[in-house]
Image 1: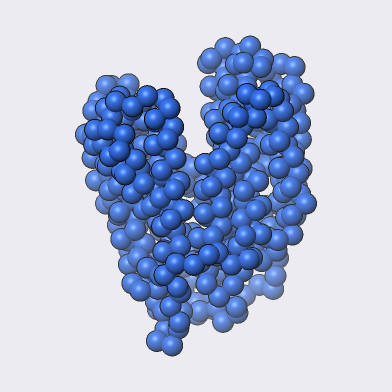
Image 2: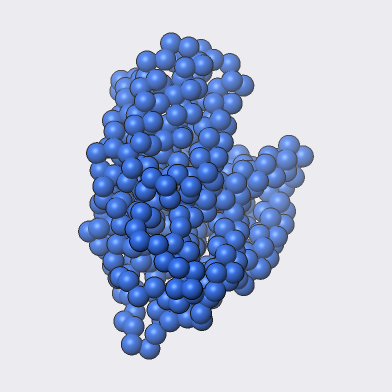
Amino acid sequence: MGEVVYDMRGLKRARYAVAAVFAVHGAVTGSFATRVPWIQDHASVGAGQLGIALAFPAIGASVAMPLAGRISHTFGARTALRGLISLWTLALILPSLAPNLYTLCLALFTYGATAGMADVAMNALGVEVENRLDKSIMSGLHGMWSAGALIGSAAGTLAAHLGSDARLHHALAAAVLTVLGLVACQWVLDIKPTEDEEPPPRFTLPPRSALLIGAVGFCAVFAEGASLDWSAVYLRDRLATSAGRAAACTTGFTLTMALARIAGDRIVDRFGAVRTVRVGGLCAALGGLLVVVAGNPAVAMGGFALLGLGIAVVVPLCFAAAGRSGPNPSQAIAGVATITYTSGLVAPGAIGTLAQATSLVVSFGLVTVLACGLVAFAGVLRAGDRNRPKVSPASAAVPDPRP
């Protein structure tokens, strides 16, 4: 790809800009999640119907993500990200306007489609900045997403506590986040295709390499989704814990993941992607084992904390490896993102179904087994390893000719 030449100062500015975009993306998610009860009441849907509707963001994302590469090629990476992040922030308004189940499903499909395309575009730019800087930044970028989600959820919690109309809340949030996203996009890398570069297909299945990398991401996201949605229930039902302490376990898990992602880049740069994921898998497997055998809440909470610590950097490293696994980074990233989105969609329901048939202990036994999969298959992330010959700051200012 051809683009303007960036010196080290420009690359650092591009890093901070894409980090801000990640935070904006996360803030939209946090803003939406806290107002789901209001949206449910406004659309007059029951719990079962709401469950159906909440599957549509993942469906929309899975359908639309393969289109992101073609959009970036057509308009250039910066312009594409500017448009896609704006569509995503503005899509926040739609669910709260839906008056019934059908319009809610349509709104959430659109919401998920714009989320997925923006997700692919910003991760592709994050990988490109990481390549130019020749240092790991993807874990920190995903940490910024988590921080944005926490900020958005905190603002949403306050709005809900004040009894505000979600339509007004989301309209204001969308306006602010759109402006912040557009401002941040001014400084991201301006990558444009060369005249002889073949455009990626409009829609295609992910390459085989992305499927292997995505399988590792599937294990991590399954454990994340299971822990987020079921950790509080596990403590309450299995260990007879108070509602407040059970909720604190989920908050602690989320906070552990965010902190580990923010600190993860230094660890990845020192030990490499493969070793980091293998050690993380061992940590997550130990955490899952503690959850399974826990006889008191403190042990279970420690287990969930270890789970969060162990899986925190896996998905960022999956995106980094996908971006370096072939000639079409956006296509590979879209494939990995589709698999991880699917994992996040099926995990809560799979845990619930297995728990109903057996017990929650058996369900988290499955999570532990998947965590062991991280140890066994971490080698497929070798493409994302930063342990390779370093480049000088001067050479970082020109496009990287390596495949």
